[in-house]
Image 1: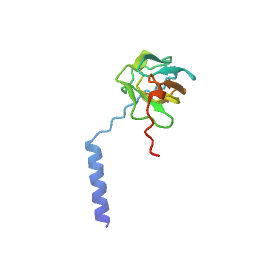
Image 2 (image 1 turned 90 degrees about the vertical axis):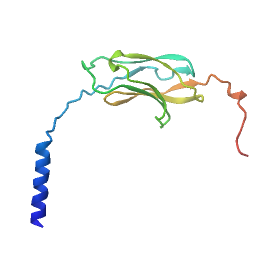
Image 3 (image 1 turned 180 degrees about the vertical axis):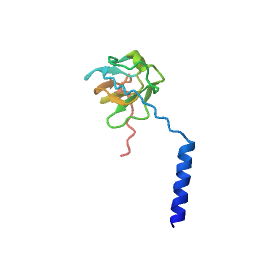
Image 4 (image 1 turned 135 degrees about the vertical axis):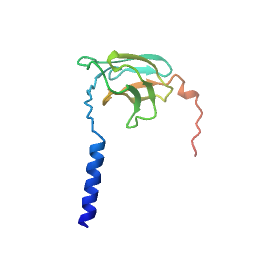
Length: 136
């Protein structure tokens, strides 16, 4: 039993010596979303500007930025934009077609996720024109 433990320890030590560990220090930047503000109303399929506070941003940001739409407690799968410079402070997006509701928010990912305030998206389709397909 002691021989197996000693051999395992020796193997782990050799593997650790063969693979140098490089610690990478990442800048954590969590910008506050400033637009849309709480209570804002957007219409689906329109162009809108999303803005965030870039004060205190690091010189370089290690992760690729991602902007997602959140509905209630569900964040995925509404990816609105990805691969943009988080230090830019704004981005124009096309509001996706979604049903009218007042519990939408944006999530800005860079080095960390940042949830914006809750706002409304108004469908660009008149809901009264949609037939009722409920099972009765």
